[in-house]
Amino acid sequence: MLSATASIHYAMAAMNALSDAHFRFRSIWISDIHLGTRGCNSELLLDFLRSTDSDYLYLVGDIVDIWRMRRSWFWRQAHNDVVQKLLRKARKGTRVIYVPGNHDENFRDFAGHRFGRVAVLPEAVHTCADGKRYLVLHGDKFDGVVKYAKWLAFVGDNAYNLALSLNLWFNVLRRRLGFPYWSLSAYLKHKVKNAVEYISSYEKAVVAEARRRGVDGVICGHIHSAEIRLCDNILYCNDGDWVESCTALVEHFDGSLEILRWAEMPHVIAMSHIESNLSASSL
Ligand SMILES: [Mn+2]
Image 1 (cartoon, protein in one colour):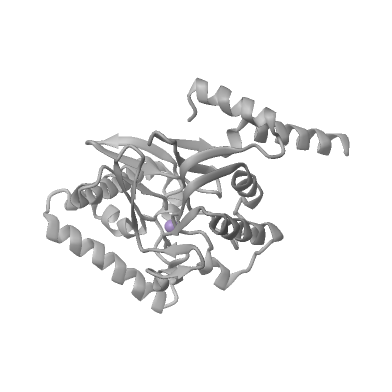
Image 2 (cartoon, helix red, strand yellow):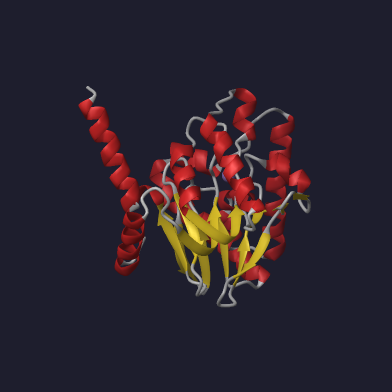
């Protein structure tokens, strides 16, 4: 959510250059784009990528939905444009770090490699301008922990590690048998009543991992729910998704973090008004 002054700043910048609004950040995190599926909001994401610039750009998993593409293929020109735009940013000097998720886990085999100027890593630690350190990971490995969140609260570190690795093998086995990954976010949609409880269990599991690792906070995705929340002195940040909420997490040059809800940006709202007027007048 934008503060009042930030909103005015963005609105003015957007009005100054509607076609090429330029917002500079130190870092940007986006995840859960799901390119290759109908749900991907590639047009809005393209507008975001064209309008923003950063020193660091983290792709926090589920960028291309390889899983779903095995069953049905949905690839538009705008999906190509997103890939091209990301590669061009890397060429122009943005440090692009790709941390694969469960829907693009095939890329995890390439962890530690560089493709052109894009580094692929299983997880990363980002140091903000204010010196705070954040663990950056997709977050799917906590699905299993969330399922057992209640009894895990009563057991020690070893059981916790065991649950993490059991979840990994559970999903390797599922994949071998041709089942899809057991997805928390998909599960949530079927259990809406318990969604709040599950999201908070997920947050607790991710925050516990950050504490174990001795970092100041954690930046993840996976559950399609953008959030910045201080949990027991660990800053939990989720960059959301580009299927429903169209959100990104950004770091300003003073090291402060903010969630951008791109569909709520003044120039995007203005554009959607223009589009709806056009479609109304063509009826
Ligand atoms: Mn995921």
